[in-house]
Amino acid sequence: GCLPPVLADPLPRRLSVGVDVGGVLVGGPAPVVVQSMTNTDTADVDGTVAQVAALARAGSEIVRITVDRDESAAAVPKVRERLDRLGVTVPLVGDFHYIGHKLLTDHPACAEALAKYRINPGNVGFKDKKDRQFVQIVETAIRYDKPVRIGVNWGSLDQDLLTRLMDENSRSPEPLSARAVMREAIIQSALMSAELAEETGLAREKIILSAKVSNVQDLIAVYRDLARRSNHSLHLGLTEAGMGTKGIVASSAAMGILLQEGIGDTIRVSLTPEPGGDRTREVQVAQELLQTMGFRQFVPVVAACPGCGRTTSTVFQELAETIQNDIRINMPVWREKYPGVEALSVAVMGCIVNGPGESKHADIGISLPGTGESPAAPVFVDGKKVATLRGPAIAADFQLMVADYIER
Ligand code: SF4
Image (cartoon, rainbow, N blue to C red; front, side, top):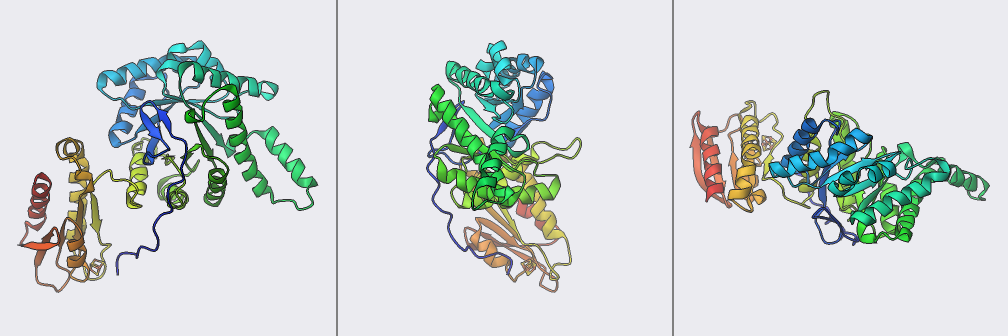
């Protein structure tokens, strides 16, 4: 068999308080939102506009940009303006660390242009000024009617809080492990910061929480607890997930389990790109994660078997790839022209064992001949066999049939 059985349905989605981020609802009844982050210097307006536009075109529904100094804060309204002129309406989130309070105060046009501010409670300020500077950002958010994400990250965890919890734990008759204390510190940092923001006057409808760690089991434990202890909208993400397949697998494993349990309102897949690599890959992975779990549909699904000793030729893999590429290239046009096209399913199978069965389950499917089978490829449309393709043009003929199906 080539396909795993479905073991259980996902748990109902945790009901969180929805937050409007520049017209995109995160949480509440909204579907899980895909977001991403640029890696350009925001002061480089051209480069940042190009990357935000590419991420948005790839399907990122919210894009975060770094705002780390005066030059980048000054560039934010220019980036927004240029994107608007290009017709790219994706909401921009400012990522602030250390001096966010100052940058937002000194650059009102930046505060206005952003759709949300990300605050890291672990580095929002220094020692005794921490709370005051946190409150300063929250007050700016209230003034400009913007939501915030309180984004705790274990790499920049509030050390005073961690030290206090460690001390308390060491005096406890039943001390927890250091790892459990660290998890608790992350959760408390998020919850206490949210409380402070609400006491300052920011409504819960304006607060999203995240608590990112880089270990899969820690992430699952932290978010399960956070979900149980609050009803804030939650941003999921594994921080420092890593490069290539490692980052993809780790993010999918961690977020897949949480999403299955109904936890998570927006996701970011943080992948370390290869030098010069395509930043939009993280958007593609996030979409595929949500789509493959059945939570959202972004692009038509191409089901292809893995191939085995019954398929010595590479024809079916090439055909599956061609169909996939056709879809990727044509989707921007198809989405406009054929509403609902993202729900399409195509099957490209390698032999008679599972080929006809899987093809019948798809909207349109082909079963290519395996080794030793007669050189004929039955095509199924809406569960019925409609044609048998033969000869060297099988792939091209099937491509045409898919295009024709979409058009019809
Ligand atoms: Fe299954 Fe046939 Fe594909 Fe092999 S070639 S993986 S048996 S459908």
